[in-house]
Image (cartoon, rainbow, N blue to C red; front, side, top):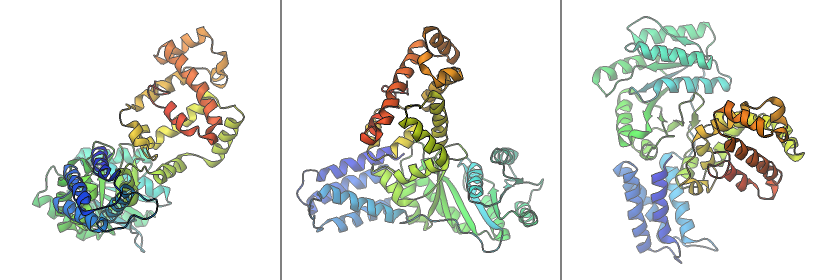
Length: 445
């Protein structure tokens, strides 16, 4: 996420390394590179210009006090300006004082709109809401089937009707929600490959009919400035209340995230970070700015962990580690939990400074499936007591997991080392343990 932009900004900021003070000359050189980096990241031209001017105005003449270095001060100014650019703080969903809250979801075909509806519904249900999803894509039966499948997966009801009038379907769904105590109605609208007048008029009429509390535009972050242009076109017809950026886990250049608020005037409310139904995060400007500048995102990492780890189980696990009773059975459970949190590389990237260490390291989540296969090929007795794993047992495990005896031996050795490291975590063993999970140095195999 934002790797290219992060790398180029870092190069620009390095110009202040070894400098004793901030001058107009060294600021000018750095701003030229920062402007180029923003434009290459597909940031809107006017936004890039304004950003650079704001940073320059704040930097020139600023006194570097105490032990603070010019480089550190520039990083702070750039980060603060990025946060300002993206909206300063998280923008929550608005909830109607009178049930139901109606959320209209619009976007182009292929942007991840239908999947977002299911992700949002599941997130709201976790917060105690009773959502209902509505299939209003009257042109694509596949979209209706997809929403029903996602609803089944998330255990959330889907309202659909054999009708060619999207506004009629939505209004009947709202009446249905009132009868069956569904307090949030999420309407999935029809998408198109391009913006056209008929589509815009249809979704505009639908909006006028249901008067939504929230109108969210879902756009693909990977299409850069086009995402912002499309959002602006939708806003002129619909009066958006927020934007959702999908595919931020891909090779995105970051331009959309940095341009949307300035160009459209509406905040980014959510970001999609993967294809799984749980891969949806609230948009925190300060956290995204920290990620772009390679500072990590510990708060999001902690929130992901808290959503998956049980407090009581964590205490039991800690006790096992302290008493040297951590087994492959325990490790398997932790591996499954970590996989639910998302891509392992993304998780490690949220730790400050880890982005640089991972730059040339290939972390493939499929490699962890091989580790899982080896452990699942062990009997329960073997998982709880690896010491009994003699040559014949290891041969059987290798054959059962589709790996080699060398892979099994390597895992056993690394597991033993990890057990020792986990006991010494309070003495600085955390970084060593993280390295142990990486390919070439640990469980990545």
